[in-house]
Amino acid sequence: MPLVEIRNLVKVFASADFGLDLTLRKTSAADVLAVDDVSLDIHQGETLGLVGESGSGKSTLGRLILRLVEPTSGSVIFNGHDVLQASAAELRRLRRDMQIIFQDPFGSLDPRFRVEDVLAEPLIIHEQMTSAARRQRVAELLRAVGMDESAMPRFPHEFSGGQRQRIGIARALALRPKFIVADEPVSALDVSVGAQIVNLLQSLQREFGLTYLFISHSMPIVRYLSTRIAVILRGKIVEIGTTAEITERPRNAYTKSLLAATPEIAV
Image (cartoon, rainbow, N blue to C red; front, side):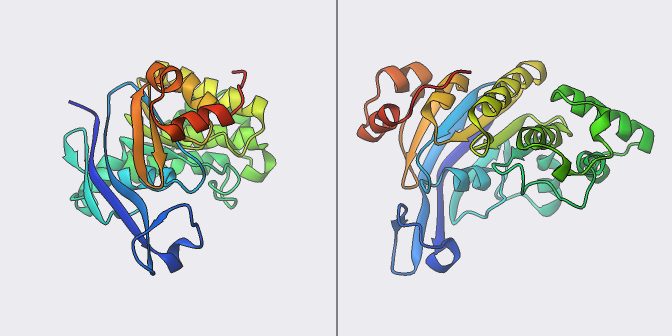
């Protein structure tokens, strides 16, 4: 059984709420169809790469899966549990196993919190731990992402973009999740730092047995990291297959254009 089963997922936004993104399909003068009847499975231990241009609906799809955005219709089953029908208490339990790494390492960390507080927050909410045990867990999380305890008393603004993204990854790992949505986690970073983050995600997947939905507009990065690739255009999955199938034998014209338009990246 897949870890995540997505069936006929649809999200319609009011145009006023969504801004002026004209790459998405309009269903009426007032509505924007951001995710259009998407069905796919994500299997335990794999990385499913979700690739498409800006405004294609890929980030919205990732947030719908985690129910950070409420869907218009459809279903999401995570590890046998219906995410979209879950009560508040059930959803809170599911959140232990479903986490997200955000695109913007500068905006995703509360500037008022020290790093220790950022990483301790999910532990305070979900775990019954002594302050000493929490502090030890925070130190372990920092070491897991290539940092150390010296970061704990400092504020996010004292770190580089790559370091902030490592802190964001550590926060996502805090509750030992099974599934992580990585929403363009390297797009705000320069190429060399982004490559380090991609390699870190790959290493963490092996160490902790993680399953990823890796969202990106970069086909080379998705090809490097992913087990399978889904290509999204105007909210609709237009092609899905193994990494080799999509990158070596693409069938869809849009997939071919993505492959032709993105340069190679050394990782």
